[in-house]
Image (cartoon, rainbow, N blue to C red):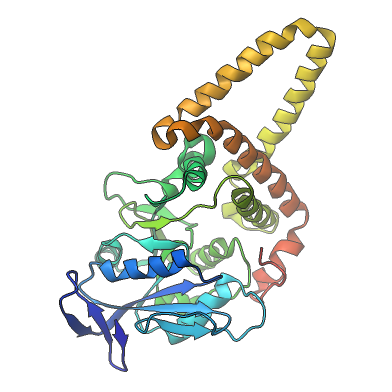
Length: 362
């Protein structure tokens, strides 16, 4: 793919020819760190089945990244790690498409990603933004698949698991909060609200969607608009990510973001408190009645196996770790949500006023 002043040269599906087309979609990727996986993911974009022109804009803080010639490379010029919102705004400044497609640097699209999404935009001219699921890639390691199984499980994500798993049907669901790993927005809508306007590293997509809704725009979700999104491996990388997400969600719940005040976001904190109370009760019982140890152990093992069986089809032998991963996920989220709620100024800074907050890249 080669850019010029009039359009973009797009490889056709079988790679046998190149055709110059006008840019209809600009794909913006904020790159945090270069990696072999990111470079391999870039090559998958060449397989996109899209009859119209598109360009890919990769945004980094420095120029030290080596990228293919068909990628438009933009830098922020900052000497520190900027948030993805800052990078996306920088990419928006040079993007030429009427639809801006945002995808994370650890994700890659299904071949019909753009074809499906643009078809929906054409069918619904009043639709401003569209999101879809991020599925666990088939080549993920077993530790990444355990992390993915948490997001895909009812026990892990409840009704939000639709964001992480394949669904049948082509329904369009009204939404007011869409994740940025798979988000397409009309340029006119982004221009109307001034872009992302935040240095948040976590929760920046919630803030953008909130501002779009406040401006009167319509957002929707479609399960057929698919990307593949690599998970952080269990345990430490996954828990660091979920802690960052939860702290920002808690801060948003404290600071007027209605979409973050739904009961599902408070549940892990409630479950964590209940678990602590349960452990205290069990210890008290064992101190008063040591003979209860055996039935308590049996009940615990049965509960462990029951939870593990819910993931055995996805994880096989690794399902034995699923209960521990699930419990640590919810405890980490529950504690971090409370921390974010109590220290909201630290985690969202001036984001609600439109000025960048600092010190948030984790």
